[in-house]
Image 1 (cartoon, one colour):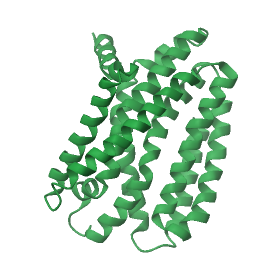
Image 2 (cartoon, rainbow, N blue to C red):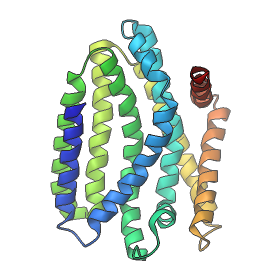
Image 3 (cartoon, one colour):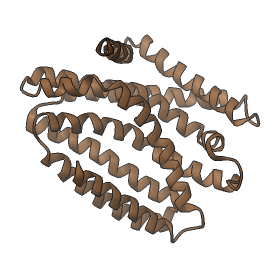
Length: 276
């Protein structure tokens, strides 16, 4: 965990070093954009998965139960964060304007921060999934795999910053970070499956296919609704986009009778039982 934290700090230093060579305000845009991406994972996923972590440790030697718990954790993460990613992507400008758009934070700064937020958004889903998978690796006593993947992800991020930063600006640096997190999620998942059989690839594949399909529908629905509120205050635009994205996504889960349509309520129920 200490090595992982150190590597994250290295990534942040390189991001800022490359951003310092870009237009003024690039470092601020990246910093604020990442805060907005990291917030949902911290508030929602960290809370919903509280009952999962001790259960993973208790099931370290019970492979079928471990696979079931990892599947449930990833299902919760994908089900909650996918529509949230749609909201952040479609309503990026409104999110940034509502959070930071006052005082010296002018329209130009809102626009560049929204660009960073847009390219960071897929990293939110990868970050949440990686959290579950890495915790499962720790539960079975494997700390080497997460560190190895973290080192490779750091290299990907650094190379991406150096190559994409000058070409794409803020978007390139954010994209490099996103690619590194996606690699970390996929790499840790593959090692957990290969070394410990701790992941059900068929379940994860079906989950991600449904999520991608419903996310596409949610984007279309959110964009369609957004056209009716163009020019209105940011809070109205954001509320409209959020309502459209979540309605389409969860309605799709219900209509498809997807297994993950009930996982969030189940995890909330588990949290309440633990508190009692």
